Length: 84
Image (cartoon, rainbow, N blue to C red; front, side, top):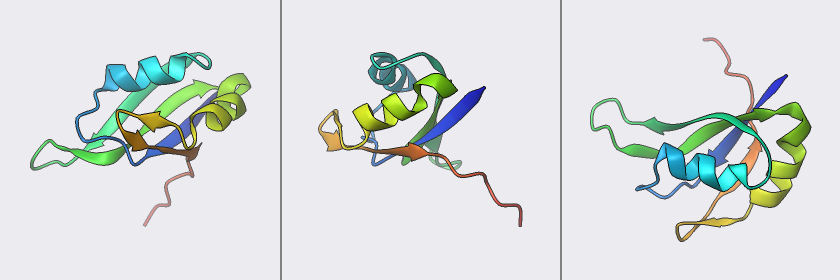
């Protein structure tokens, strides 16, 4: 199974590969995406990392509060999106 992790307070200049590289040190990363503004294409400062269920707790413990390119990031399990 796959767990999606929410990653907040990302540096504005971070790239998807940087995010994958940082999380890969603590387990298998299946995918990552940085959320961008539709009009400007700039990062909105958060993203998601998809990981194996077996690695999710370890990654949250290791990365929550870690510094990434000068910013302290927040990592937790993503909550399902509510339909409106």
